[in-house]
Length: 151
Ligand code: DQA
Image (cartoon, rainbow, N blue to C red; front, side, top):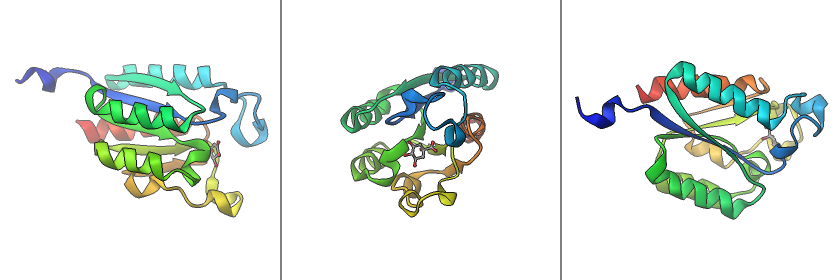
């Protein structure tokens, strides 16, 4: 077997603005888990599924775009919670289109039950699937979906 086929698949987990405040930020909407808890959940799930997980958060749109571009060389798939940039960023959509890796979009909250401006996400048009409303469990579900896709 070719060496690349035997290597663990790499998932880049990207979190957008204000997700660094998880745990204290509007806990009635986003829950009590911190971003560190989400990172540990992703690391544990990745281990179970045989995935290598690179977990990151940024408050900057440009940094997010650069990380997505770099993923061409460093990842096999992307799990992204673009946070508020979901609803505003053509730049993040274009970066995801440019690299062509499989993408799963996650939101902690059910964006369709919230303000109308949250109902549309630019990223959804390039995502294999979108998981929203299940809190941090959405990250685990997304990793499971990606592991199956990458088999
Ligand atoms: C979010 C939903 C977005 O509308 C919001 O701007 C966020 C978090 C979520 O995980 O539910 O920051 O992506």
